[in-house]
Amino acid sequence: MNQDEMTLVEHLRELRKRLLWVLVALVAGMAIGLLFAKKTILFLTQQPPARGMELNAFSPWEPIRIYMNFGLLIGLLLVLPVALYHIWAFVKPGLRPVEQRATLAYIPFATLLFLVGLGFGYFVVFPMAFMFGSNISHSIGIKETYGMAQYFGFMFNILLPVALVFELPIIVMFLTRLRLLNPQRLSKLRRYAYMALVIIAAVITPPDALSAIIVFIPMVLLYEFSVLLSRLVYRKQVAQDLAWEAEYGAK
Image (cartoon, rainbow, N blue to C red; front, side, top):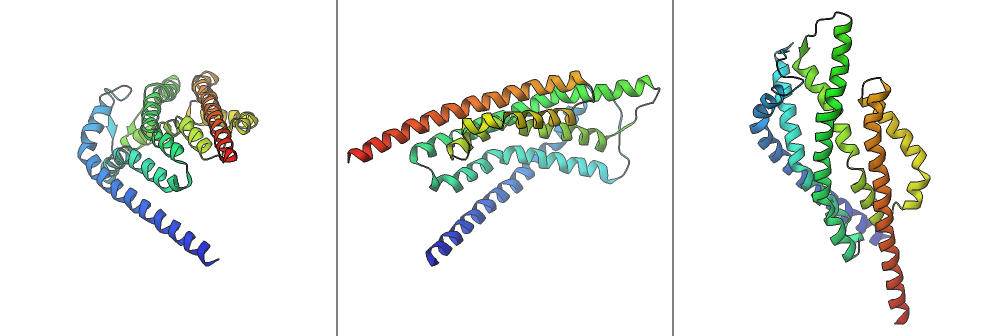
């Protein structure tokens, strides 16, 4: 019992150490992000749909808040590989050596998929949602006056969920490696997963069927790709288990 309690305390200490490292990296990343926040804001305001648009500040705090939000966002992007590494390091003792090497390789791919998700959200979903609202305003004779906080807040509310959805293949592979998921379970959950994806697509897109379908289809492909990757990982695990059992039995 005492040994179990000591083991739990050691796990909590390890978790605290990992969280502290991530927090330090986040502070450093945000400091770097604040240096590039101004250039990022100016660059985005020169891209469609913001190009030529007059963005207003409705309070003295709005520019400061947007500036800090961009610094935090850039910091999160920089700290993402560090956070993923410490998650891997925390679960590493419970993995076999071959699983440790395999899951460590997920970190660069997870970062890449997050960036791809941001790109898809910014170049596809965000313009589509913005133009839908703008066309509605024009059709009913409303003059558009946008605040910078509302514009960038609308952008973040679309980009971040889309980027997180693009992490699905890596998350599924990682959980399969940890033996918390398997392709059979994912297949049984397919109808519920599709329902969740429909809800996400409907929330982050304009209220029309075409926009939701345009976003829903890549999400479905991501889920099916995740099931395929889970099946590949699971087959390797089964083969490794059989080989280990055969060798152990031979001894």
